[in-house]
Image (spheres, rainbow, N blue to C red):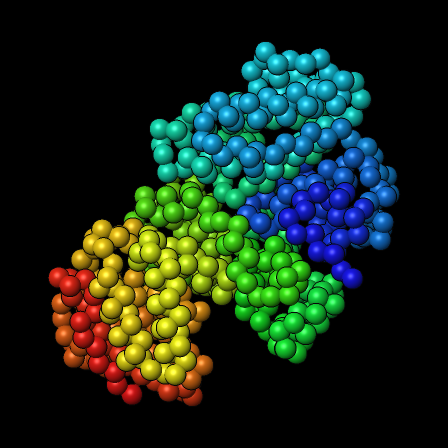
Length: 521
């Protein structure tokens, strides 16, 4: 029987407990040789903490934990370095006092571990510096510093400039000694979600190697297709039995739900490890990543930037945008990418642009479910019931019934609800509402789809039908259908083989719902 390490972030516990471990130790070895100052950005629940723990075990000389793994044949010395392992993941109260207490506690624990005099009265800059120097003098070995989730305290207050600045200053006090401690350090590894360029680790450590988008490290976190087939055969079989599916069907479903993350322009996709392990353990295909919660900072930043949800999927970004300072970014796209809600879909070397999109079905549908209270209504039960009925209507290819349900649903939403993006009487607001509802149904839904002559409002694909939809606010359905024809929105899909249906929809700003529609084959 296979034991899946759901939520286990300690390498030692996985190895000693007999849990499944997908071997990432060649990456560990490659990063350390000759690397000294390394930074890695990955989304939450992607194995950053486990990777950091693996570095801890490796530099601690725990050779017995690596028996049978790739690094066992690569490493010949197995030196035991002193390791300082910090995690800021729990510093999410948004106060400098909470952050300082956490850092001071971890510094105190390290002093106790290495028999160093407790320096509780010193500020964190001096205390950290003297700790490293004393450990070096006492052991005669350079020190390894591991900092996991370095940006967690900042992401909590990212939308609040008044709290962001003092929090950033506190973290600078902690990180600032690293550059001057260079002679005493063997290796520094820092993980996080985003990059805050004004922090001292980025502004002062000019030799910091950011490996986040390097192709050779694209699979350092996450599970590749080959790793899935090599390590999960038993789980695939059991998942198939539980859901009356063949192994091929299971692989196709797993790919649709959890694959698709790309962290370099030419890299293969990787699966979300938390979701994949959860699916194997529970023998069910659920949206596990979102069950752990959508970060509050993301919703707050969407409010701050008035993010147009309908234009995020398929958006384009220049390379420099991925490296934009998080605290000074002018677009929410980098944060969506770094957080795992968007990923690299394609790269055009001629114009030097990346095309971004949702990685997979879990992310798209899960995000829509999370955003329903902000874009549609806070009445989640009503939304679930309506979405279920709309889904059944679409399975019968009954768009008329589906829109009838949508009309009644939108008419019952209070005026001030669901206005995260636009004014409650704008066409963009109503388009976003309908887009969220259709996406909620696990259908292939796209919004603001570019064509040769413009952008169609909504494109929806079911197993049998392609719906080309145009919305008009206080206009007519005839105008909407005429635009579909004049702009040739349906032409690219004529060779698809599925039935093409054109749908013109009228929204009323006064009634705040759909008031008319017309459907044409």
